Length: 86
Image (cartoon, rainbow, N blue to C red; front, side, top):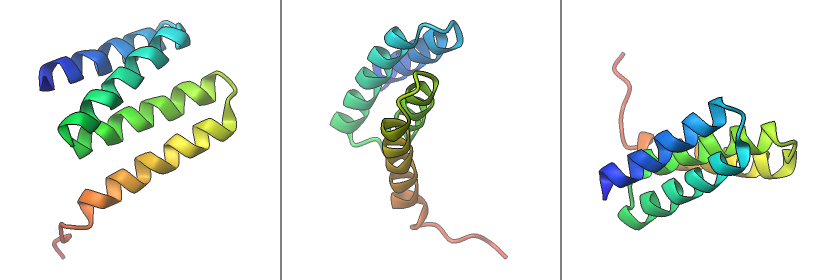
């Protein structure tokens, strides 16, 4: 399932780069769904970030802000467990 999750994310990125935001959105939502099912926090962060960019490109600014905030929240949920060397 991890490779299927990555495949959805990569397809979403490909569609996004072509300007096909509807397909990009569909694939990134699948990416997020699989990432959540596997509890893969890194993949969830990437999916939320991609969804934020896509919603922004579509002019859905409130939704873009919401999922981008979720990306940050997810990111901090696993990076807070690591200390930064001085």
